[in-house]
Image (cartoon, rainbow, N blue to C red; front, side):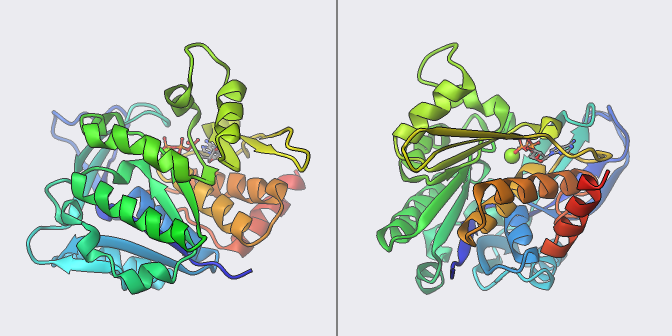
Length: 322
Ligand code: ATP
Ligand code: MG
């Protein structure tokens, strides 16, 4: 089954606090640069699985930008959609860890090269060649990129393509009003929806409704597959069976030594979307995505835990033989 995925958004370098409970307002050691950005991690994971993926972004004409592009290229991402801008430096992020799952970020995105990303940077021939667009909520950081995303959604959908959406809400980004407004528009187009469990209430119609009630309503509105990501607890799938009845599945998280939670959701989403498009069953796509998220948290660095199909298969063999 032929498909080609694309994604649009932030490409940046990330610096990780060396010790837990390190603070941003006190001098401390950071390690990096690591290549990062949620859609970049997503694209890298798709490419590692061996599927074609185009990434549209901007970096500066600096060493960080070069590092980002060469890393993605080496992993097989189609980098023709990445512009090297002379007007701004490559984006960056700093992250501190409270416990293994709670993080604080300082993002330098809106004033960086990827903050300049607009529809003008999107080569329409490259875009029209794609059959699926993945949207990260974290990428809706400027009016320009929201506009680019809307146009890209229209183009992909008008030629019969499909859309996946991971809200990836970051409390640091909530001050952009256009971002919230664009969510409704994107949800109308979404085929595969990939929220985190703490984002579910944001999409509820009524206060206090259960996760299942919220998801049933979204399925009735036309979303085809939903996976709610639950960190080390695993994930819940919601879809409709052939009779149009609700189909739910739960998968427990794999037992791994978690050293860095960043990137788990992006790797999970990339694996689930790729394998669904490749024609795997929901059960199998969920199992591989769960493994992909588990392997992501077991490596330090946002994009260091992306896996090949063979690595996922070996990991799953090992897990099931325990
Ligand atoms: P983020 O907060 O970074 O956006 P997310 O909510 O998108 O993250 P998570 O739920 O943290 O994503 O992780 C995605 C998936 O990865 C989980 O559903 C699970 O399958 C796997 N996973 C994440 N953390 C762990 C862990 N500690 N152990 C095992 N599997 C994990
Ligand atoms: Mg996420």
